Image (cartoon, rainbow, N blue to C red; front, side, top):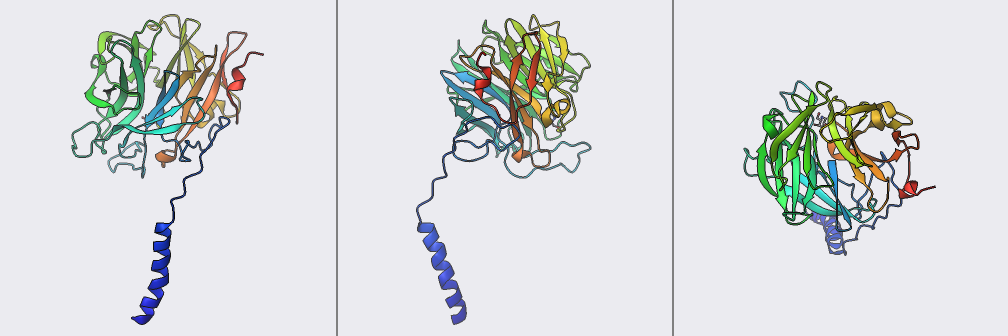
Length: 349
Ligand code: DGJ
């Protein structure tokens, strides 16, 4: 007994002393350049956790929203395909002034743990959140892909907030225009009209759904495009009056070749331009999958293509690949590989 006491005492003292030490603040991180595929830390020194995400620029600040993935990646016992997932935790929100240094603003749409029937219950699937600002209602509106645990729901969930950092109030889910809605994005045009692009019909065909003036519902006006082309991960942007859609093929969490398409009207016709990626592993999108294309505020012709680099068996540790979109003299649009780069790349020569 005495022996035990003697052994326990120094250990206990050490633990107690440790507990009383002032908590060391994590060293603040300052990112000076984009380093695609590398670990990307937020301003507190934690890896950025915002997957399948989208950006919003509002009043001089960028906001980055994405799937907040925590914990173990699981493959359900019934799975006949690689539907790896983490429990639904919610949507993470980060803010930044320079697109490089991101402050964690918290989980702005939270999982609902006490209702197994709720879309946001941890057992469900929540992917590809996108937030847009509605100038008329002054509300921030989030659209996301919500799934039942068995991946059969194929619906869009909508949430709303008075503040870009949330909390977002979940309004519910539905199939826009009665069609399946999986990988999705929302694009707001210069005239304030918003559109949801959604992989539909078992991911075979892209739907372009016009939204009501408050951005909360579809108007009923829509088109089916990229019919039987199996496009996923749509990211839409506009440059010099033309609409572009960057997308991936449909191979689960595994990378494939990206594709860029262009149209004079958002409704199409859409013309496929081919793979915009150039450099090593461009045929595999540098091991990434598109999620968003963000215009750089205050710079002409400056857009950043944002990709996820999924780690399918450890989704919470998936990384990001952000690369410049280059509009060439010859009219070609490319996304060249850079192991390290910064916004200086957009300065006119
Ligand atoms: C590809 C999609 O783009 C991802 O968002 C995710 O749904 C995976 N498929 C699941 O396999």
